[in-house]
Image (cartoon, rainbow, N blue to C red):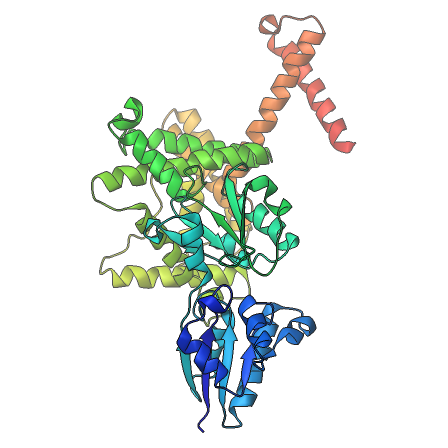
Length: 485
């Protein structure tokens, strides 16, 4: 007899759900394996005198499920090498949530004939017990893959094999990142059997239920699920006729200032190390992205999935050292790779790339710094810090001359600032951040001066400049003493 592996589904419960053909095939075979004996159908077959060898011992000896499935596959290979016809039985349907069958197809199908015998799956019983049509939308995921889901809240979510309270607790915590804490959850046990049980619990109490190898967690559609899709839907409603008058009036142009303001509020939260506020401000910034995307969608320009696809593909394409075969040992290597790929992309677009590609609306210090880095890449740069330092001194002298002559003051001041930005680059400092730090230091010191004048009973606005300067030096001294401490 040639080597052939029959993979037979046992259905979700006992013999009454096993097809007649599968029952006859099992009863007429000499070599029968079961992934686990902990299944009603296997127990009833054993009671009828059918000899079945289970792989329960492998579960006991292996530390991971993947290790268990690998060992089962290799054990089946050993049996097939004897030239025999082998039966391998699995709970439910062989092609539904059955990792061992996937491994069998990957590792054994090239050498041996694999025959799949379908059966009822646990999913069929869920449709019956929950009384819903799968056309409404169903998402089936293993308990360890929930964090990666793009949940929309419009689908039924089915999580099979939540076999103990520890797994249930992990599932609960993962679900609570998207679902409301009080969302209803169904914990179903032994569906299709005489001991079938379905408990309805709020999500925060889900792990208080009973769990075993026949337990499935089911969540119905929930309009309050947190997701990017949900945010896009809310934005679409706000822009609709039934939505908000202000939101309906906005355009890409009118929202420009909002985008700038939200970006700077994010920067402020970062500078203050205020993580609570940073979370909120990043949400406001994300809203601007979704808002502009909705406007474009209404004009049939592009959709949210186009934005997501573009950035995902760009990240993968420009990181071949992570997602491809290239290597990059340092951050400088990464930048070189990024620039090379970016140049190749522009060449494929058959357009002549602009040498200076930075948005002209960038803050002046950032634009100056980016411009200097750009020309430095093609060799237009000082060999060491002496060059930019001398340039600062030169521009300072020219500004003094302009002030004396009363001509070219604006231009020379700009040249001096530009030279200082270049010097900051050689010092590995970001001119924008350095200036912001200096501004914050000035603001804090000035506020301290006002506080000191108030403590001394002085009217600050009536103080002479000399007296203000005395308070300034006092504030500076207090500041320095705090630094020493």
